[in-house]
Image 1 (cartoon, rainbow, N blue to C red):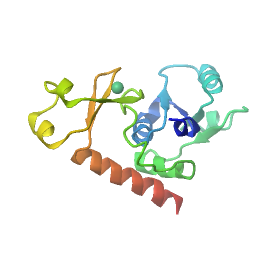
Image 2 (image 1 turned 180 degrees about the vertical axis):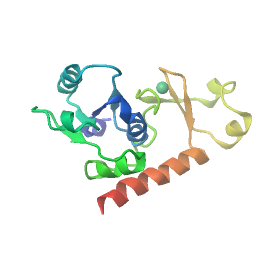
Image 3 (image 1 turned 30 degrees about the vertical axis):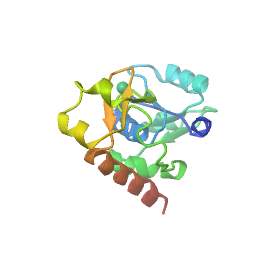
Image 4 (image 1 turned 135 degrees about the vertical axis):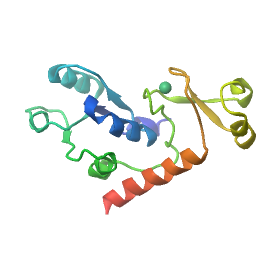
Length: 160
Ligand SMILES: [Zn+2]
């Protein structure tokens, strides 16, 4: 758990919601606040010690002590690669956070989710995690494997 504190945390403008989801897949705390002024946005970033990600040149070049990174691409894969120098792919953190609401996931016993996931999933999987905030349940199925591979490639290719 201690290592988790060392991961950078992000604050993203709301037009970067896909990038936020992808950063959450990697385990990064990636918050989005909708419809707030850039001043309030900066206040939150300063308070929570978050790196700001924005697509606005004006915001990226604003005078500030905060770390603000301009995201140029409108393609999510390229967006991940743009910041891959400050990212790392660590399997320990993959799917440690809800991609929908950014909350930490908790392990949950199979018996407790019998009515919440399809039967074939119960048959083939034994480890499950749940978001206590939105109730979404995660398991390491095909979808997980695909995201795992995709994120690894994006982060590691982006560095080279
Ligand atoms: Zn959630």
